[in-house]
Image 1 (spheres, rainbow, N blue to C red):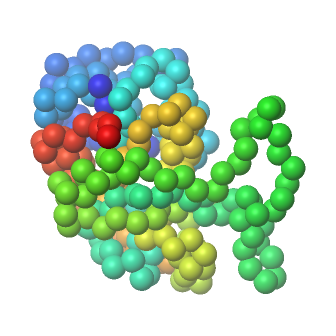
Image 2: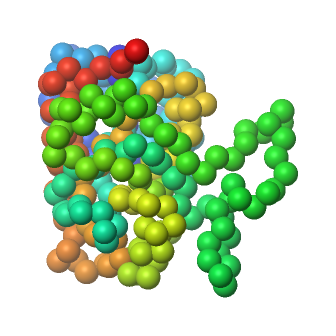
Length: 239
């Protein structure tokens, strides 16, 4: 069984319409759906907006259920030199916590470079970036040849100024910005659960100009991408 995860129900509306043999089950005090999508057994859940809510809910889910893989879907913003436009698909090879660190007069210092003493016997060691499952990514890239693959950047403070957008792109090499992906990657790493992340581009970063944004389109193309992957036989893969 595969877990399909999104931040909000709006990002799974199309998928829920295609889900068959559906039953509602609970995880703590939240509802999730169990059923079949394109012949694949599916758990479908929503983690909430932002890293903290998503990490909390996914931890609950992976404590109660053990899916073969997690497929994270939603919308995201493209960085200036990514080559991505609204309506394009992006697949994550790596997820980075983009704004965890210290901003100084001479630039940004990532948290993992601050040499803060950590003791893994007592608490998990902070990690700035996570590589996602390479086998799932390879298969997804074959099934979605039009999708751009690259580094995704997870932030709490979205880059809606041109300067911040360029800064984050330059310091991370990212192509796509979001608010949950690195937290999902961190929890999946803790539980040794393979992760694939797919996002539809809903906007360019660096601007709040409404005519440049199309959130429903970004959500829709991401879900269409998920359906294409499942119809093409995407499954957790072992060497």
